[in-house]
Image (cartoon, rainbow, N blue to C red; front, side, top):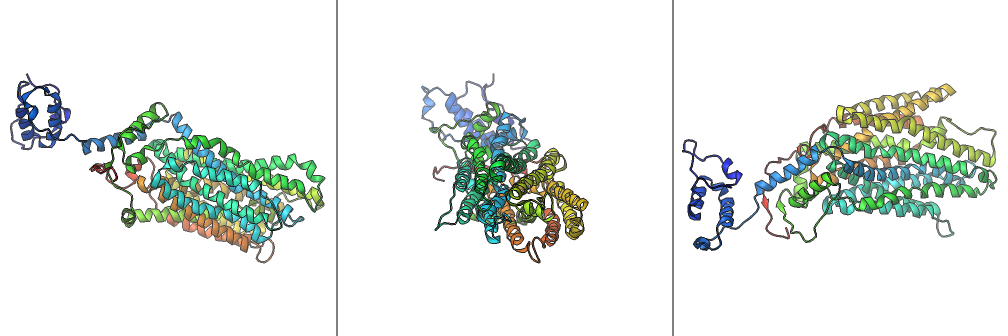
Length: 598
């Protein structure tokens, strides 16, 4: 009779000598010394495991109790297998209510971001009527530029700062803080006041910068959280669904503007044309409502679990991560025992030296350059147009007020037409583009969609730029220009605007994923700043809105360069995040940290 219960690992061990006869296991009555000797001879790699096994099986009253026992310790190979098994569970998981919750919690943030960013399209005209030129409804050029560029400047800072912090202290710890900044800054804008010592436009610029920092933090955090919780086959759609809320936010800003203008119509028509007191109500309500969806989503952001990948690969706590995976895949919840002992493993650790070493390899640096420049080129056109839709619509004469209207009637008609025009652009181009990407991103792949988008945008901007004068000369021409303008919005979103958000959230290792996404996104906002400053300073060269056609030609050039930068990125479709990281996964865990402070 042979000894029962020998660990499976012992049975699977290969013989060390090919021609050696199969070892016979000792009889159950064999002494522990004989058993240890036999295992040590034929299975030296499993000797420690067997020693623990024998010690556990031996009676405490036995005379062999005096044999010194080998210290028990976790097997790095077993922990490595446990890590890969937990990752496989996430990668192969069916789409569940938990994934829906992640999409909704992250998506509300992007809805709020887009609402707050693009509401300034309409609000800047309202501010112009109240605090600028009462007749034209325009702020002085530098003030108009300030309120529009403050948010991208803050976003640039927030993307770098929160991207780094999310890799340093965790996604969960930072998620929600950025939303608090957005809520506070949005409310601050709505209650800003004018005084002898304080200029309200300067106050708004400060608040919009702070709001921009919060919006910037939302990009890397939402991208990485949705990416790290998603299964491989649906990751592209899940990240696109989160980002697509940007289109709904932009549309809602125009819709709320339309509702507010309509609600104040009769009061506005009775206003003093030199004061326009009710327009002051309008922009405050329009901006202030932006903090409502953020306030609703705040609790859910603060209670979202830490991603298992961060717990495993950055905190290096494989046991807790495996437990989290089991919990959220089965119950949609998670639990962290504060008294449980933390077992940290030896794995690649983020540091300045490791960061330099990783990105000094050309294949990794090339990818970061590709994601960063592609986002930079795209945002030059996306924000150059998006923050100036009202100017573009006015320049081509789309929906301009009747020339016979005077005073407050003209003010109402202009605001009404601007809100309607922004809704048309959102519905006709922006929203369909996001959802076209949603349907095809996991079939076509990210790289083909980005290449197609940049190519189509290059063609469209060339047509609109070089044929601008002919297109805007007649009513039918203006309608054609409006159609082409909606097409550019469509191919921005069914193209690089979505894929530049998705790819950096997938293509880098966990310990640098948020940082790399923050760098890529900040490059995009640098493009937005360049575009907004350039647009604000150049649009009126040669006369009011006379330089618009040349700006469209410049946008065409940057779309062309985006085609070449797209060639630097790699396809991420149907690959796990660990495969995309370019790091060997077998043996990723080298051991267990014995120093608790490590």
